[in-house]
Amino acid sequence: MIKLELKELTKIFERRVIFRNISLIKDAPGLFGVAGPNGSGKSTLVKVITGLLSPTSGSVAFSAGGREFSPGEAINHFGFASPYLVLYDEFSARENIEFSMKIRGLQFDEAYVDELLQHFSLLKRKNDPVRAYSSGMKQRLKVISAFAHKPELVILDEPTANLDSEGKARVYELAKIAAAEKLVIFATNEEDELAMCNEVLNINDYKLNNNTGKGAKV
Image (cartoon, rainbow, N blue to C red; front, side, top):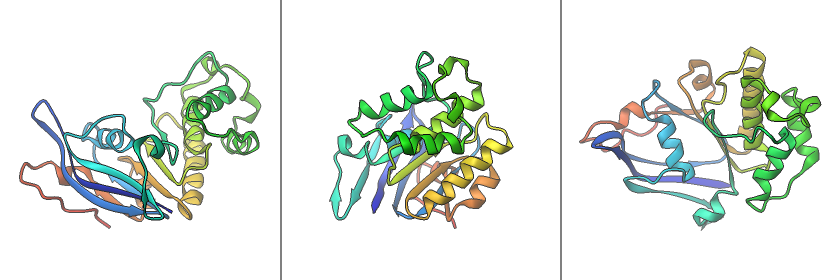
């Protein structure tokens, strides 16, 4: 099973401390929350974990079976969804998922992807261009893409943005099922979502200049 380790992770933008000295080790399975109000740095932390941003200091490491993955290997072991990720509007849902997997050298399992599309009520629209999708449909597709290659770690940044109650319920159901075997991370300020988590890290606990890290709060 995959293990995520953050060591004294710090990110500073133009002398503003986004977070400082976050150290933790998380193993699968489980549902782990990253909490904080809008603009607090949740998405920045997620971007650093996934490699979209570099930390100011500290490190992020992924390992399994005692072997640490290189950054190039690690990207194939986690799935990531966020409202700010870009979809290709001229592609269909199926083509978006297949393309994102093939550029990483991952095998496209169409039967499994169809199951995910069915779960989110998108199967009948899988061949439609994404430009015809509503914002909620696009968000569901982004969540599907995070799970499509059956990763051991799933990182969901504001996963229910633009979703109605039914869409949210589908995300929660899938996350709970995945968290029984995998590590799932929710970055959110939604109380209902944080209540689902086994453990929660509040990003505001890692802001002070002299902070040495309080650790995650149960």
